[in-house]
Length: 151
Image (cartoon, one colour):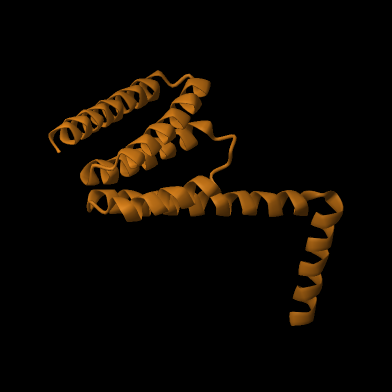
């Protein structure tokens, strides 16, 4: 019985390989694994954000970005926006101008992708985020100049 089952399974796999379906199945499974893995990272990142752990969330968003299919520009844009928000939150708390500049760069990448998809709601949100980050950066620069004059 076991030998017959093995023969049937081997025959089935050979039939799939011959018809070219096996390769398609392997690609589909691989793509699904990438989607599941990126979704898992994004889910973990969102839990970290909810708990206020923006550094761990940033790491998870960066992992997710590596796993997202480049053709899925909408998901890439949203994930980059979320990563930029985390980077900005960390930098803002530390008054880190370089970190804020980095967040603006990531926001800009998200904005470009959002414009490619034509997602007006995302475009508006990312533009607001960029404006906020630029305002904080300008404030930091002004404080730095004022501090330098007082010293």
